[in-house]
Length: 399
Ligand SMILES: NC(=O)C1=CN([C@@H]2O[C@H](COP(=O)(O)OP(=O)(O)OC[C@H]3O[C@@H](n4cnc5c(N)ncnc54)[C@H](OP(=O)(O)O)[C@@H]3O)[C@@H](O)[C@H]2O)C=CC1
Ligand SMILES: N[C@@H](CC=O)C(=O)O
Ligand code: NA
Image 1 (cartoon, rainbow, N blue to C red):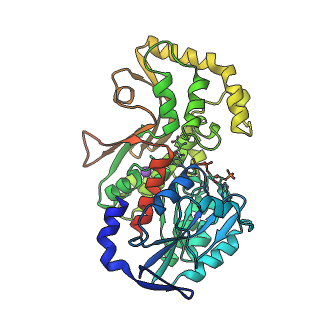
Image 2 (cartoon, rainbow, N blue to C red):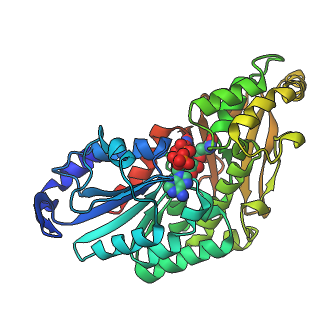
């Protein structure tokens, strides 16, 4: 998608340009890109970005920051997918977000814009968004922390973006690369009324229950499928952040706030949604056994999870005896004023039982226009490739 869109832009962009005294052949209007967080999604994003041919790309990768190191090279953009890791690992500078803000802001000009991509799950990095936006730096992220956290931070983000005109885009925060946020924005911006959004919003929970609860009374142990979900890169850095339902609660909060964002969204759908102070206001059922609450590392958590396999096995057997499967679902219901996330039982012939595989998400938008049959979006909802694609898709929206 990236290269065909970009090749159509070739003629309008390709002209010589000057960055701090360096001449090179590249687009006249350019977007300088700084990446913070080079884990699973971050690394894949960088590789996808660098796979766009540099002659046609309006993007220049000028900064990389991990949790321990940072590089800032506006005069010599990073172009090599095979060497960026060693460039960063040899860097001696420590991350300094105040300095990065100042350095990036200095690069902004009528022909040069800047986008910062946050591929961490850090609250501290999310807390920087208002400052970055105020400085005119566009922010793109799959990190749910800012948009689902404290309402005060979210309001500061909206205000900073309005003040400077810099944009914040977060498609990959819900359904990874699936077009969930953009679809919802278009529904409400064109005047449709959201009656209910329901679905399976967690790739991890989807994978776990697709494998664990198939309708049969027996199957693999709960702890074993959780470990595989982690190995496949679906879980949050700490898998308990998925199993406690908070990841789904965060996604539901983002959907609620996205509905409220549009000035043309109907007053009825806006006012009947509860005003969420944060994702913690969502009615959520946790799957974490009480004795495992608060375990600081994912490794320790997973090593103790087998102690509770028998409890999960009992739930599977009960569902099977009723001819049902277990699925972890989320609901945003502006009509009832309800937002909730929890484990439910569904008949074995229900779409949540028959049509999902792997890390699939399924999201059903019941709206005034899409009624009685909902608009349905389905596909992989976690994993580095699809998440990074959603982030790169957002970056492409800026040009
Ligand atoms: N994986 C998926 O399927 C999806 C992920 N997401 C979101 O994408 C984001 C990244 O996920 P993922 O790549 O899987 O997670 P990873 O744990 O693989 O990567 C996160 C990276 O962020 C780095 N990091 C943490 N704090 C900081 C900091 N203060 N400054 C710079 N770097 C920092 C970590 O470094 P270190 O290891 O050194 O701590 C780590 O490399 C998360 O917010 C996640 O919720 C969204 C949709 C799907
Ligand atoms: N851990 C999350 C990753 C994407 O948001 C999930 O499993 O859905
Ligand atoms: Na998405």
